[in-house]
Every structure is written in structure tokens, then in C-alpha cells.
Image 1 (cartoon, rainbow, N blue to C red):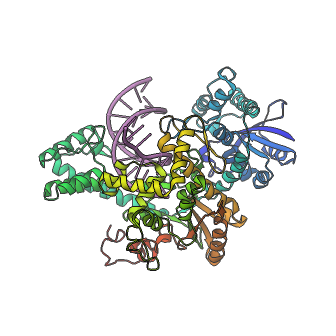
Image 2: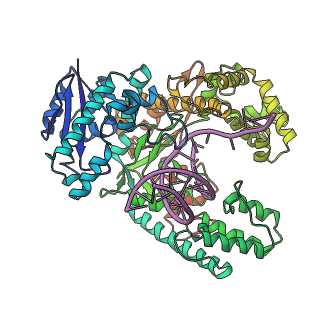
Image 3: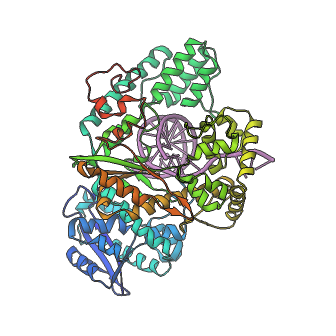
Length: 601
DNA sequence: ATGTATCGCGCC
DNA sequence: AAAGGGCGCGATACAT
């Protein structure tokens, strides 16, 4: 086999989906230990990669360089990936040396950083990206840099050499080979994009701006809030005005744990509840909350909508748990639970003459924990036909008052909170606060849990200890790094979330080929597809077939939502009390429904 | 001008 | 001794 180290210079990374032909400007490659070749004859590079004895290696090539070659130069990337002839050093670097949570490692995996770490400081010259940036500034854009500029060529040559040097040090294990298949399938999302209801986005942006304006004026008139900037309630002068306003209505201004003025939803709701007879305070809280509650999701979608009327989000497995990030725009954070926000999903549409079909995995983090801990009593909660939270309620509170044939356990909701406590290491104080019970009762519930599921408790203790000295490995073989000092909460959580992620991805790998380019979004435990109306039943059956399998006796359960005319429409059965979730309702010119977010705007 | 920290909204 | 995990995105304040 020949190892081809590859890098491309292009018209700018963020232009990959809209630039068109000419996006790839200059290619650099080296075959094994041979000289680095740079060329504008991109077709010749594709021809080289198509040779069956070639393995191509490069940094982020699976998401960027190779898709660009596929898009404009006929590269058969599907085949190369299927033949296991692609090595992406970014994916390998993450597996070899996993990131911490939070933002601390956000710049740790660019080619320069990886090379410095792996090769040692002395072997990396220059300062990477700044050379390119300077050239782009000097010539008026990446696409204007002369392809024979010595600095441009030198930069490209250096990156090819770095990749080649890295290849000798990085370890490609079975997990990361699979990860290439996973990420390639996920890359269907940016490649194909998600259709946007552009007219509706523009309307919602305008309507939101109007609402914000009205509320700012109210706060300005009543409390002297300044009108400068986009969020005057968060500026120094604004906070000062609000503190005075709270004092004027006779309460201590609410504080965050760090002492700042708390203007968040929870703080204001709690304050209001504690002084429900103080009408001036209630009014202040409500107006402030209404202003703070305005999100700019529609604007974000608009900002990222391309000339094709679609968003092409970035897909990345950068999270400490391995969970998938979907950004620019962030589809994982669009409204769902709040009535006021779920309508955000109406901005995203199926392809013409298609419908959107969402499928989600039931209680997938819990199943992942069950697979890890091997506690038969815990695993039994996930047996076919059982509802985790009902079973958990029965385990903690007993079967009294629950008729299994008649519906849910009366304390299912309480049990759900405790389930999450199980996965994430919540303490009695936190559970008490969360569930509105006293600490003694919370302690009792956690104790019952530990007693009923001894294998689960033992596993948590073991992985907390294990995480103290080393990187943890999920059931699928993904390596995850826990922050020193956070073993108690992060160790069980990362294994649960990391394995849940790969249960989802296993389903993705099992999908029939025709559905892959129809994938539109992934939201941790949910996949969204755009499928032709006359193939919905086919699609549903095949997707559910792919997503449902058993691991060590624990079954994975998938459920399909409603085929929808937009993404919100997919949840009309799930949210029967919110009629506006249904597109058919939104298409009416008016309605009488109390609280309708659509007609009541 | 650009980047970081902090907060706040939301999602799973 | 006690301990709820992971994110994305926008805004402001502040450092460089």
C-alpha cells in the first residue's frame, strides 16, 4: 500500500458548500517518503487517490478536503471510506489523546497543536494559520492569493510534511476505524443541507425584534433601563437601573451564586412566587423575564442560510463524551420543551415533496449505563414493553397505587428526576432542590436506589476510582478523559453518554444506503430524515429496524415521530396540548385556542 | 480589532 | 466532605 499525505488550499473553509467550481485552489501531497508535490491539477490528485493501493491521510480530510474533492472533482469518497483507505488525523488524535470537557481544549486539535504535542516543540516551525491569514488580508481573500506565492506554497508543503510525520506516531485502533465510517455518514448532513423556510425566518426575526423593542421601552419607561445596545438589561448601567427597580418595589435584588444580579428565568420565577402579593414586583419580573426569554434562533438560522436556501451545519465529535456537536447553526439547541420555543423548529423543512421523519432512542443514556454496570435488576427496567420511569417509580416507591394495565405509575415524574440523579451523580441536596422534597426524603430515595441496584452502585464507585488514574473506555471502545477532581460526577456520566452516543451511531451505521443522504439532523438521541411522502412507511420500518438491536441482552428501543411538513410538525402527537405545533393549525388564519403561540404572537 | 471570561437562554 | 453531566449561541465587559 502507498500512504499519501494530503492537504488542500481552498477559497476558504466556510465557503465549501456554496463557492462552486474553483473552490479547491492548490493541492499538496506526498507519496510515502517522497517529495511533497504541489499542483493546481486537482484531477491528477483525485486520480492518484482512486488507485486501489493508496491510503490517504490528512487532518480533518474526512469532513473537509475529501468532500471538497468529491463535490467538485469526482472523488468517489464513499468507496474510499468503505475500502478503509482514509485516515483522518483529527479523529485519530482525539481518540489517542481525548479532550477535557468545557472550552479548555477547543484549540487543542488543530494540526499545529497536535503536531507540537506529538512531534515535540522543536519540529514545528512558523505559526500556522497566521501565514495564510496574512496572505488573505494582503490579497483580499483566500480566493485571491496567487497559487504560486512562495509563502502559500511553503505553508501547504509544511502541512503535508506535518501530516506525514504525525502518521508515524498516531495509533489507529478499531474504534477509530469505525469512527471514520460514522463521521462519513454524518457528513451527509452538511453535504446535503437542511431546507429553510426563508420567508418565515425573516418574519420571525422581524417579529422578535419588535417584541424586544416593546419590552425594552416598557422597562425604560418604568424603571429607567437604558436603551443602548442589544441587551441593555445586561449592561452595567442596565443592571444598576434594575437593582434600583428591585429596591423600589421593596425587595432585595436577586443574586447569582457569584453575587451578580440574577436576571435568569429561575431566579425571577422564584422571587415572584415568594412575593405573589407584590404586584409591582410581579410586573417587573414578568417584563424582565419576557425580554430575557427572547432567543435569537431565527437570526442564527438566517445567518447560516446559504444561497441554496439551506443550512449546512458543521458536524463534529469534539465533546468530551464523544457526543456529536451540530453548529452553525446549532440544531441541537432548538426549542422543544417550551411551548414558546418549539415553534423554532418550524423554520426547517423537508426537501420539496418530502416529509420529515424523526426517530428517537428511548432512555438511551440509561440503557448505556445498564450495559456498563451489568446489574441485572437495573437492566430489567429496560426489558421490552417496560417504561423505565414507571419501573423506577415502582422500585423506589413500591407498586401500591399502580395498575400496570391502566397506565403510568402515579409517581413516574418523581422517579424520572431520580433516574437522572442516577446517571449524573446528583446528591441529596440537589435532588431535594430539584424535586421539591426535603433533604431527608431525598437521602432516603437515593439510599433505596443504592440498595435496589447494588451492581449499579458498585459500578459507579469502581469507575470513579478508575478515572482517577487513567482515561476511561466506553463499551464501544471510545476513550474519554475525565477532569481530575470531577471523577465523582463525570466518570459515570461520560461512560453513559459516550456509550449512548455510540448506540445511536451503531444504528446510523446499520441504516440502508438510500437513507443516508436523507439524514438532516442528529440531536443526541434523535435522527431526522427527509423522505419522499410515498416512501414514509418503508423508511420508518427500515430506520426502526436499523436502530433497534440488543447489546449484552439490553435492547435498544426506537420510536418514530409524526411525518411532518416542517420539523415542529413532527411533534404534533407528542404535544397534543399545543395545537400550533401542527402545521395544519398554523395554516389557519386565526384560532380560538387559549395560549396559542402562533396566532397569539 | 480580536479574543477570553462570564452570564443567560435553550437542547439532550 | 460533598459533588447533576454534556453542549451552542449571543451579549457584555475587559484584556490584549
